[in-house]
Image (cartoon, rainbow, N blue to C red; front, side, top):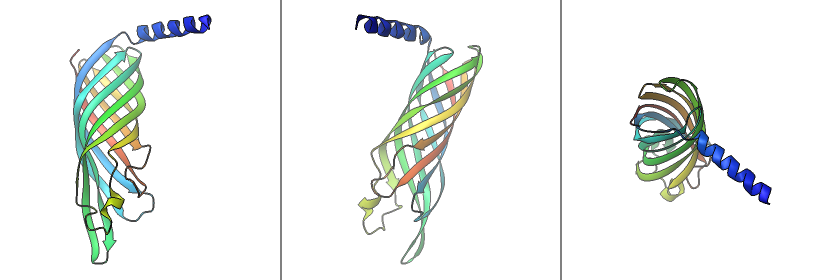
Length: 193
C-alpha cells in the first residue's frame, strides 16, 4: 500500500511538472450545425452560428485545455404535415465547456496542435418554432444538458491561434426522437497570458 501511495505521488508530481506552463486567452468564431434524426422523419440542413468565450492551456508539448464559451447551434427542418410541407428553424443558445487533451509540434511562438476530448453543453435558451405544430410538442423537447466529443487541430503564431474542430453528440439531444447534432467549429483566439 505504501509503494502504491509513493507511486501515485510521483505520477502526480510528474503531471504537475508536465502542465507547469499556463496560458489564458479569448476566442471567437463560427460554427455550422446540423441535427440528424435516426428515423429520417424530416429533412435537415445546417445553420450557421457563433461562439465567444475564454480558454486556458496547461502544459507545453502535451497540454490540457479547458474552455468556456457561449454559442448558438441549430438546424433547419423540412417535414410533411397534413396541410403540406413545412420548413422551420431550430436554434439553441448554449454554454459549452470542452476539456481537451492535446499535443503540439513546433515552438511556443509557432506550432501546430491536435486535440480531442469531451465537451459539455448546457442549453440556455431554445428559440424554436420547428415543432410547435406537432400534436405533442413535448415529444420533441430538447435536453438541457448534452455530452459531446470534439476532435480538431490548431495553429499558434505568436499570440494568435486558429482552431478547426469537429463535434458530435454522444447521446440523443432530445428526449424522445433520436436526434444527434454534428458541428464544425472555426475559431480565432488571442493569448492574453
